Length: 67
Image (cartoon, rainbow, N blue to C red; front, side, top):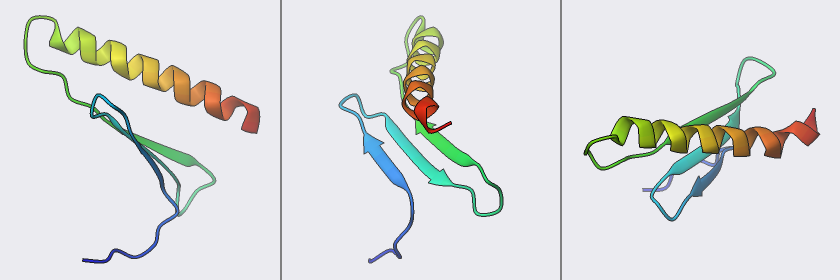
């Protein structure tokens, strides 16, 4: 069905990762949500942590010029 409009920006990356940014409804904050998956195998948790760190760093560098 149709969803109501929202002030959320969403990106889907080629590897299936989803990144969403939206303003808080009650505070002057920007909320960032990241969803990623990593196939279960030896070292999966470390690979997922590395990917999450890379996303964190990229979002931070994107937002730094905004203050």
